[in-house]
Amino acid sequence: MQDAKGTSLNQLEGIEYHGIAGASLDCQEAVMRLLQFGDHIIRTRIISASKFHCLLLTKENGDVVAIKSGFASGYGGEGPTRFSISLQLLKEHGSEIDECEVDEGVIERLDKSALTTAEFKEIMATRAIRPSRWPDYLLEKHYGRTIWEEFPPVIPFAIIDDRIMDLALSFWDEPDDKLLKGYRRLEDIVRALTGLTEHGAKLFSKAFGTAKPCLTWEKTDEGEKQGRINLFAGAYMAHRNPRAHQELAGSRSEQLAEFLLLNHLYRLEAESTLNPPSAPYHRGG
Image (cartoon, rainbow, N blue to C red):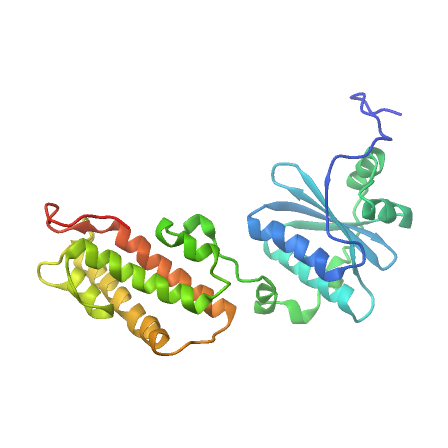
């Protein structure tokens, strides 16, 4: 059997399959990975058979990803909880959500990564259930802040300064050590550029904040310059100094937030220029 374009409807449909059937957390994490990476899921079709559910996610470019049947509804437990979180995340990301009913055999073949073209076309063409019942799958406790805490703290490599990329790549091995190395390295960079010998907040105040600073930001007004200077000094006083005197535990989220603050200082330093440009020092890592 073929469609109007001559495609065999009995062949397997070439879509992606994510998640593990019956593994609720794995299926939730499959949804989260797509969203975390920046895929714009414009449509979510819930595929339901009794109390078990799969998802067909349509990306902005038209590609479709199937999430296997780790989700459930109608009782208290892990399946409904992970289903609620996944739907709430997709909703918050602007995905249009609807639902259709299928035979249990369709769910079984989807779980085996073996949907045929005919089955896929039928699912996508099936009229959505009306009135919508999918909002009933959302649990009240997943409204608001709690769902975002489901995401793991992930280092956004695209914005990391090259001079601390080595620290970013191994950050989770020893976060405290990597932060200290990052702070020290930034001080070394500024000392090499300016010839100054101070440390910590004093170094940055003298490098950027004197009447004739060694480093400055061109085309930046005085208020903004002062704000940047305060940011350097404040970060070292509030974070680097306590960390230099004792190992700070902190959650992974807190450690990552501090690393991103440190990374921002690197980016600001990279935007600065020697003052005057003919100073006998050099810019380098």
